[in-house]
Structures are given as structure tokens and as C-alpha cells.
Image (cartoon, rainbow, N blue to C red; front, side, top):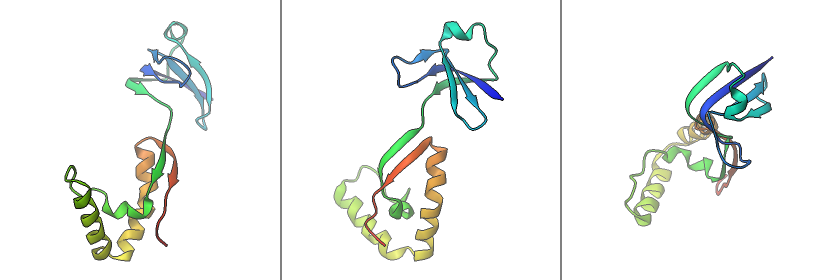
Length: 124
């Protein structure tokens, strides 16, 4: 069984985005077909979304071992502030909390649309 999904804009990575395009997927999420607005006129979508339908994102450079620092370092304060705060957090956050943050990071990435990650690890 498959589902037909339509969105205001469908990005396919094969040319220009499709306005009011559609995507047919099987139960495992495999793409069975991509349809233009004209092709969608003769189809009844199972799901319709306002906004963009995009392929999964790839985080090509992340540091999962630093997941404990997410939302704990103020933005736009410069690299020296960032490094100082990161070093402080490394020393003050317990190992169990760091491990829990690493364990939760992949799920958080998936929720943001990331389907693959290249982890750069500088610690044990």
C-alpha cells in the first residue's frame, strides 16, 4: 500500500522545485513516484501539507560528544566566549548527563529532518 503526499512546494533535488507537486511513498518510505502539479490534477492525495516537502537533511559535521552544551551557550558573544563557556561546561556537567545528552541527540536530529550525520568525535 502506498500514500500520495502533496505539498505547496516539493523539492526533489532534480531541477526546480515543484509547486503543488506530489510524492508517492510505500509503507517503508521508499519513493515510488514524483508528480508535477499537472500530474496531481488527476490524483487524490492522501495527505496535503502547507509548506515545503524536502529530502532528508545531512549533518555532515557534528560533535555528538558536545550535545550536553546545547542551549547552554549564549549566541553572538564571540569565539572566545564560546570556548570559555564550553570548557566550563565540560568541567561542571557530570558524565551521566553527558552520556544521556549523546543518547538523545540522534532522536533530536531526526525530529529536525536529519537522516544522516557525520560525527566528529574528539573524546573517548
